[in-house]
Length: 282
Image 1: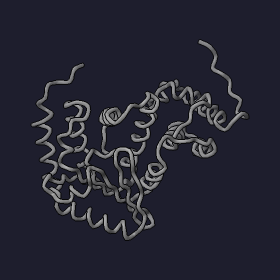
Image 2: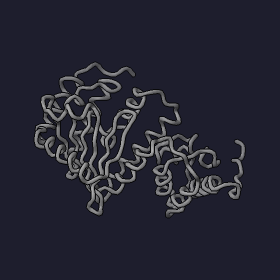
Image 3: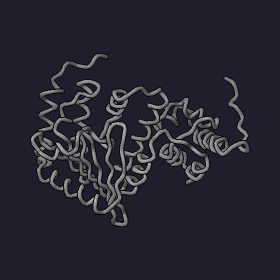
């Protein structure tokens, strides 16, 4: 096996970052593949990061910093690399707010990112439009990284209201959807997560147009709102506008099925539409 390419950390911050990642990985006794598995990216991407030729999102840098026990050094260096993200600025800003939020209230006509299984994510991204393998891995990595908030020692309060149609939309395959609904039920058993289903006949569904909205409560007590379509989105900060949507969300909560009834309907969908379906091909 050829010796690894030597990096000159004086050539760029990315090279310095890569050399530090390599040194910490070797000190931990891990291969590039093992490190990649720990942060949910391919070994080839770890190789590119160590060579200083691959840009990476903040969430991935933070994950590397944590598993390699870099004590914040990698996160600090990341801010000087000059990474140009493939995500829209409004999405990045939303992720920043989401990482701070103490409460999250979500309505969606699709399973929201924080509640998606990895296979659901991959099927969903593939259904929207073509992604290169690297782009797909990056999107999945970012979304999995966001989900780590739910496992924090003090997790945010999360309330999810789903359009009833979510229970019957086939994303990927029937088997995949059965597992996704089972994951939703498991999440709903956590004390800080509530799941409600908004029935078809509820008038509020007409006002959303198939999109989604998230209201975030920040540590300082303020609220921001994020609205999103498949290829567009935006953040609302004006208290009056956020207040109007908060009132609409409150009406959805009142008209949605109770958490217990929502769990029953989800189980019924699993049994009638997915669990009895033919097994997925190997």
